Length: 88
Image (cartoon, rainbow, N blue to C red; front, side):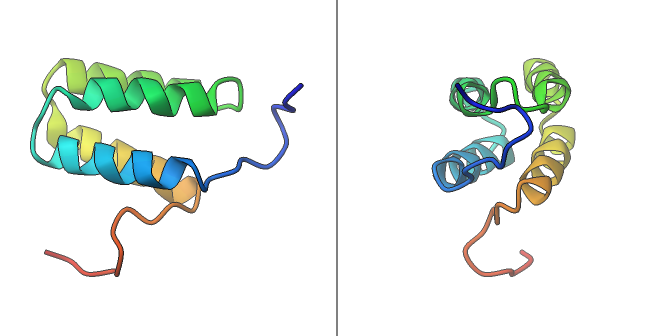
């Protein structure tokens, strides 16, 4: 059984977060599907509130706020959302 307080293997999450960030950045509601995949990976490890908030923002088409929430979540999981750190 997985330990809720154990370390999270962020490796499989990296491509999911990057894809989701691009979808949210483009304002696509398809990002909800990607969020479900991320939720599956993070089930029971303490990020339910953030993930629910993210789902709500996407549902309400608040993509700019969803980007900020996703970025904060990625940062807390130490997942870079872009290859090189460059601002556009």
